[in-house]
Image (cartoon, rainbow over all chains, first blue to last red; front, top):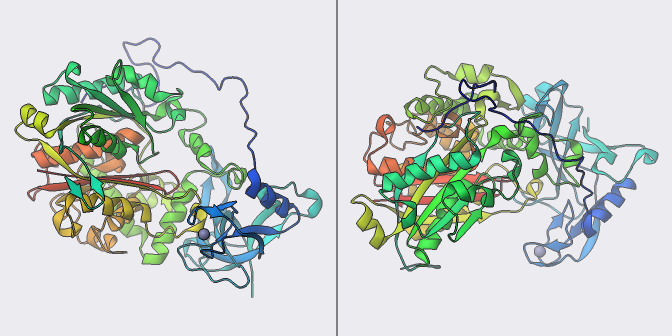
Length: 177
Length: 395
Ligand SMILES: [Zn+2]
């Protein structure tokens, strides 16, 4: 096969004097993302301690995170709905690494929570759901999959510390009967 | 020629393939890698660049190579200069999307001979780690503030699959062992591990439970290329053209927290499209060898089920029974897959298409499967469990 591998550590390959040329990010690029019509209101709801979704009455779907349109019926959603800040864990994992792949001192549990909406029932194929940190679960709870199906409730930051961010919820906490 | 809702003018064949070494760090630039693979594919087809009408380039996020407009950048090495050239990109599904796009160039009658090249150089995104680049895949408003690592979603999908199907980590590790051993027959392979065991996988570093280091393919650099031609041209070029029998692709929504992760719907739909075109109604019996996308070991199982090569939750059973071994009844990833050969994203998908090409021609050398091969399949997947791309090839 063709091609010449560098030494795995990236040190100099015998014949080539400059095998690697390092350069940082140009300037200090930062993004300012638009929150949009649906997520803008969703974030405002979080600041007030509410989880908001949107509803398409044609197909009956409840969208959390909310959308301003139903991508299935391809029409505008009909209304906003406040969903419960509790639900069940549909999947859970234990992360031992950070975003940059460095090891965390303490592992964190993360998962997807299927949220309760009064008056609605959802199957596994489409449901209002959020990814978030899970708290109150041990490593063994996650590894043994006991966390699956567990009831959880949002643990909110105190109102004065909320900024209108998904992190206004600290985590979804196990509800102990 | 018409399949139910598919219309095309010309049959299309693959007539040559090329690959570079797959390694975690390659000396060559992305353009040079593209050139090495493209040249080999042309040589194998007995063609020169002058014979090529159109060029299709595939590459995943620009951020890996660290060059914006990577299609334009790669065109020089991929043979695309002063020709109708296009780059396609559907994340990890890109590698199989490249020959799909090349197919429609030829099937439509627009071009007669197309050079299709895929390249990826993940090692350029060196600091703090290649994984960091994946940060921009997440939703910027509701996900990125949680500081996620990309492996989170795959761990969530793997665990959901394990939960729903009652699969054990030991069974999933068998995939990694098979593919890392198979890779020892591949001259491009980055991770040939002839003596690796299930125990090694289970004892490797835990990244995001249930995902451990040896459950994942490595980060890699590399390139792959194939040449596609119309029936008339193909018969002139070679006595052994490999026909593209069916193609399919689908994209699901980025809102992955609203759907069940236990079953890859996006692959099923892509497969159904390809099977309809290829006249396949029983893939388990009609596909002789398959290269489903395996950046993670559970993904091979997951995709076998989406492709209908196994029933729901049945792929781990077939794996345990040895059905998916190179000498088994349904060899899966005889190349060694991404887990063994390596994962230069777009190039890895096209490597699978090249493998099926060589398997059907009986040119896979040490990797040649035992059973006769008439029909083979390659599949890739990408983005937030969204994109499915499938190609069925045969004699
Ligand atoms: Zn609707």
